[in-house]
Structure formats: C-alpha cells, structure tokens
Image (cartoon, rainbow, N blue to C red; front, side, top):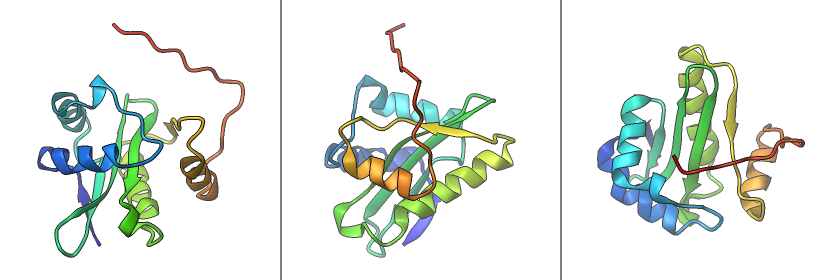
Length: 138
C-alpha cells in the first residue's frame, strides 16, 4: 500500500468508496466542492491509501478547528481490509494533528454501524457517554 495526503484528484474514487461502505453516512457536505474546501482548509492532514495497481483503497478525512481535530470517512475497501490500512491512515492523521499542536481528536460513528464501532474501540478510541449531537442547517 502507498499512503499519502488526500488531494482533490482523489475525490471521485473516494466518493465511490464511501457510497459502497456499509455504515457510511453521506450528505450535501460530501459534495466535491465541500470536500475540496475542507482539504484546502486542512492541507496535508487527510490521508488515502492506494493499492499497488493504483486503485484507491482507503480514506481518512481529517482536519481541525484550531482546538480539536475531527476525523470523518475513514473507509477501507472490502478487498483491502485486515491489512492495517485503516490504522495506518488514522496514525498518519493523528501525527499531522500533533504537528499542528492539536492534542485531541473526535469522530462520529453512526449508532448502528457495528463494524465501525468495533474498529474504533479496538484501536484505543473511547466511546463517549453523556454527549448528544445536535445539528442544524445554517
């Protein structure tokens, strides 16, 4: 696997991966323009992994607000799972956040996404109780 920062050129393949990943929630915020704006706002933090044949095998969209990091759309193709790609991309994202002075990162997992919850709890992330997420269109 080749690991590198995510770029705008990765968008179409990334979006197809996300669409084909069980438990992944997508919205207007995942449009090409929105993702590219996020990547430009957080240069070099989001990561992808690419198979030897050049096929995009995984993504980890990550950035920060100056205080806390946030990770989204960590996904690995079914044919590339179990090889450490998810862990490696997450590690690289966290390293980039630390380089920017960010010491904590949050992520959200859809409640019924058992595979995602298992991955995160198995890699040292703590599921938080007592928080309720509110959202509103601006």
